[in-house]
Image (cartoon, helix red, strand yellow):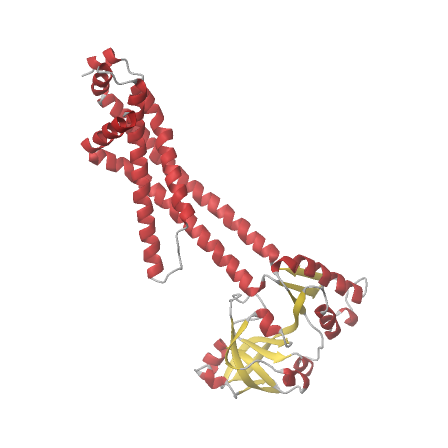
Length: 395
């Protein structure tokens, strides 16, 4: 009965002055919505960044020659290095690349782009999507046929339509090659890799004809799983050091460190934004405390009457505490509804694939209830400690 009466008295007290209760709730609404939105944005953002990096190749390791010191021709990454890397434990695929800036003409238009020499498994390792035509086959690497692939951007700009690029010829100084395919990155690297918006791929043996070089700038190895990447990276570096001069230095690395950094940055940003939301909710809690203290002052006589007819201190405290909790929980529910409406609007407009984690909803409800208890306890205690006689004398 104590709880039932406390609920009834608390609800009746809030209904008597709905406008004041609503205005007090607004701060909680804003703070609760902020918490849900912050956690939602942080969760979706982290998932997006991680998926982008993993799409590029979370199970990739790569090695390059450190060119900061003196080097010789025998230090360069060779085809024999590529073959040896293929036999490392847990390695499922290998690829080598050589890229350089180039100028070429296609469809009567001049381009300043990247020319990239690649090996057979480069498409699979780098997850390139062939949009028309085909990728290089085994014959292209042995016969040195002068064929190439271009990005969709090049094909669109030079020939207006991607499909029309197939069979066309592009000219790189005195070198001519026939376009056999167009491609795009499955996961964009935004120009931070050898693949730029305007790129031409050729079979690696053609690099010697074009530029005179016959070595790789980068060797990629693909591990069987993401868990094998650290070991494969270490083995790749050790392999290259064994196969070359002791003075030569090789940099072997992977994307795991980038993934770790992305997760740490996401956690840090979430903590900062969540802190801002909690400050907003705390300010709302202070508003609840102020209103409840005013309520205690305005309802002193009512409290005295209740005490005079037998209400205990615990019952008075419970009533005022429940009023504060009702305000905070109502604000939480409205704030969650507001955040869900915002997320649904953004998702339906196609601006971003947002979804609200249920953890955010549960956390918001718990924090809001805690705010109500924390900031409502002092006014409730003050009401419970009033002396009945003194309270009855209040006007």
